[in-house]
Length: 65
Image 1 (cartoon, rainbow, N blue to C red):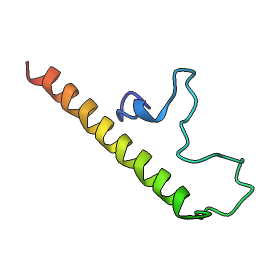
Image 2 (image 1 turned 90 degrees about the vertical axis):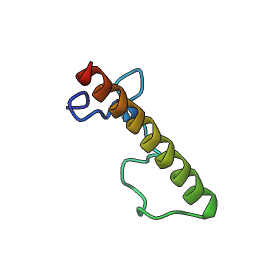
Image 3 (image 1 turned 135 degrees about the vertical axis):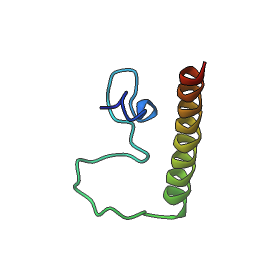
Image 4 (image 1 turned 120 degrees about the vertical axis):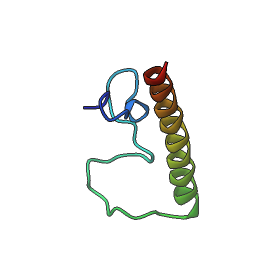
């Protein structure tokens, strides 16, 4: 699933999901505590998108060669 949808950048080297913010097993509300949390989330999402786009580009390059 992860490989097929090119989601490798969401998984760490131990095959665990990389969370953008600390994860407490759904005990707290899914809102940001402050601006710092929001900016951390935003930056990590942006990094993921860039990494995934690079992965997709590499995949396409392999296909057209």
